[in-house]
Length: 308
Image 1 (spheres, rainbow, N blue to C red):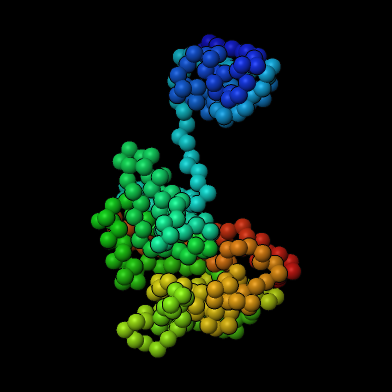
Image 2: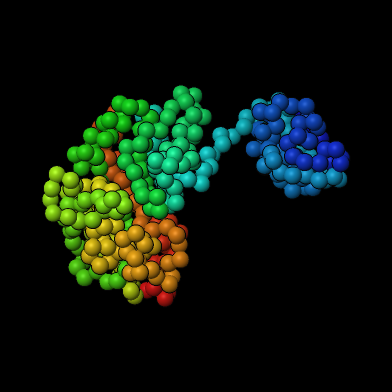
């Protein structure tokens, strides 16, 4: 194997992106240039450089060493997006981990960069250029697992599962105060006020049955970490039920008011995370389960000595 070694000093006119200097130096295609960076063939002032957009300045030394007979194909780029990460994906659906602070879908205000927008952008880069179809939602300030479909047929199949309460959804919640019973169930009918807040009300044609199960995961000094399982999936269900029991989710001013405040929870988000999702794959009929670890903010709170 005979290696080709090339080097150059950056001129004042060349100062800027490293990949442009390398391209001028080697006369290779953009794809081959990306491959050289991905395979560690490029150095700046003797140090490896793997980012095409690295800024170089006048008199920097750029060196490239490569085998001209090797393809140096670019490595597959990992998708990076602040709103979500991909947990699982196949030809029909994908499971994503939504970040807190992100709307699942636009409201009447037509917000941009919602989760469905960003996932659709991600899918548009595939050969089939599919769009994400929402099957269920998470509140804006809640993080965790969501399933999205890639076709209307798959979406309808998944929606039917949720309608018949087949998927199992488990949330981690840090709530104010000490829950007494190790396990329990909240069951009520939820109504919607004019301000769109939800509240428990007597059964009627305008209410929805909501059932929430919980189990204590960890008792702390003045808070409790819960595993919460949804039997039904009503809007704000967990938040309403826990607040109604006198143990609102930390960081929930809508339903918890002052009781949801804690000196060690300074986040704008809710201390609520969709940590586990189990469903039946619409095509294979296989039961599949996905897990998402506690977000760092919740991990730090649970592990903080003053909260134990």
